[in-house]
Image (cartoon, rainbow, N blue to C red; front, side, top):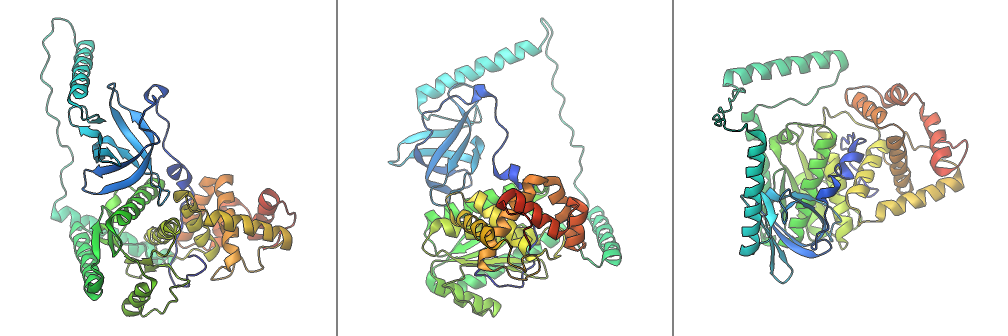
Length: 460
């Protein structure tokens, strides 16, 4: 949590390897990165899902195989700083700020193209020529083409009996692991259990909406979130886009194949208010939690049952609010990773801050905290005395935690991943650090001091 959060939350962290996922995808062949006239323009994008991105800037337009088409867009959300990558099939149309149509999804080529009829005719002709040439290159002369055999669906859907048997094996495995380690791993729910959990989540959101009926709160349901807010549609859409993009990046980082099973029910509630007073009322009524909304902008409630609920208010700075959303949602996501085992506070907060810093580039708050913290450490020649042991970092220690996490990630991402894995499976963090990085906390501090702070013999 940020310095304004004081909670019993089980904050679990594994995002080391997130570096690659957060900082882009592999480069396409140079030939496909031809200069596009739309790059740099602010546009409105209507997605196939029905959502819209308003006033985003096109940062990259990757050309398709057919001249005149675009296979992928990368845009910059000027409010949150997020940079979602949109495949052509996810986009319905792209228009200029004045409503002029610029691009539309073209079904025959499965790419984005100008909606102009003459241009489309040229593109379709080129596509037909390319397809014909490809057929001729792969077929033998004067030989009739054999009909393509129908693909067999080798993977049969699991029967209720098979799913029940698999569920029983998973539960037996969890019980055996608990006997050995004292740690309960999160259960793998059946499809019916997942649906029941989603029903519970939606019922919760309905109750919140009814309680704050005077605010006319609106539910934006995305693939992974139930975003309930009284925010205007445009900023709400931008924030949910930021959340979904971050969720995808985290799934890639953790190599999670079944992305619908991270949250209970596949989706988790995010309750966002325009006013801090309403967040305070929400916390008091639904969690018996008294907060000062002037210093608390967001909280991630991580319940023993595995349910995650995020409450927040947008404040005055949209970039900072986006950073809060990323920070809190990261905590919730990591709470659902493997088990509810608690990771030490310095590591919890360092990773959450590091992720927010990388995802919401337009918010400079975390970077400032890092610079200020390094300057302070250089003067005091200490991390504060209780950096590794405190349950709640001091405000000036958040920047240290962020810098420490970045240092460890750069030094050895695989070791970092192994360390977090060990902690989540029940090993104490000092042993996990020693096994993965082959150092003690004191030795790690000295290495950090020499490499980052330029202070020899730095103490915790």
